Image (cartoon, rainbow, N blue to C red; front, top):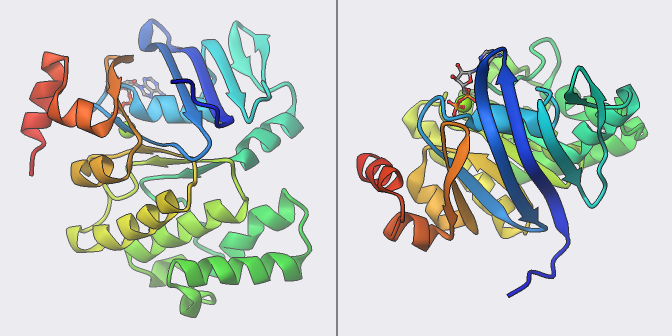
Length: 258
Ligand code: ADP
Ligand code: MG
């Protein structure tokens, strides 16, 4: 059956090498509006590199990236995919929210100032509007009472919820998460997964690199298994978790069963 929802993100044959090391060897992936796609795979399989290529934190060495129907990028320089100019790069990054394992909040700014930075500087929103929206987002992630605190005063789980609110403040078309709970103490994982589950339920388009298998299974429309820079298997959670075609995926699932 053809999927008639608009395509939020389209990756065509993405390659990335560091010198002679080929890390991504042709990854193609389509996310329709509202898709939640979890990317699984062993350490070193290229998951982070793939996410970083999507918003050009790394320049792919080959391939095409289309966001919201527009091929925003790309002009070729040294054979790499790069943005045409700083404006285009800023535009791309404002359409794609990125939540990192280690939060990447500004330590010298308050929680509120961390969130309004992008909306005021990049989207040129009036400060009063940016603050009002930031407060709504902080309320949504349960941290409105921390708006005047600094990142150092927050737990890891709280910092990650702030990082999610900061990404949402840019009203991105796609949210990328790179192991958002891997740096957290186990007792703080669930508060972050709860926020992500809520976002998934709202129909947001999300690509999630995670080792939280139960969560991935529960929230995802599609599971992608990456191995040595290639998609080894892709399918619904039921297909990939219960009935993997690949022996490698089968072994991975067996060793990650909780
Ligand atoms: P994953 O996130 O799946 O663990 P990564 O995308 O981080 O994997 O890394 C994939 C491979 O690319 C690894 O072999 C890693 O050492 C290599 N790699 C990642 N970033 C760089 C870099 N900046 N320079 C050289 N090699 C890198
Ligand atoms: Mg990684």
